Length: 119
Image (cartoon, rainbow, N blue to C red):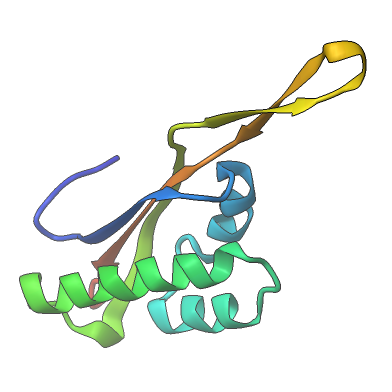
């Protein structure tokens, strides 16, 4: 991921939802203006949309307060869901067998940038 002082970013770690489910929603908002991204997240019927909305709201607040960016010109520059630690549980089955259950977690990162005047 690109780093720099011109991006407002926020991260939520150890979120109890698998990264593949989060990536479906992140692909919808990547590259969109912030207002449009909030509208998309509001109407997407996925559990990850409410979590991503909180992270996006935090990234916008970081950009406005820490870097004095204009909130009306922000867009979602980066949206990434990485895999966090996996909780391993076991489900008892027939004849003393144990089948593993993998409870996956995510690290969600959202970065916003300010659009240039000409774009």
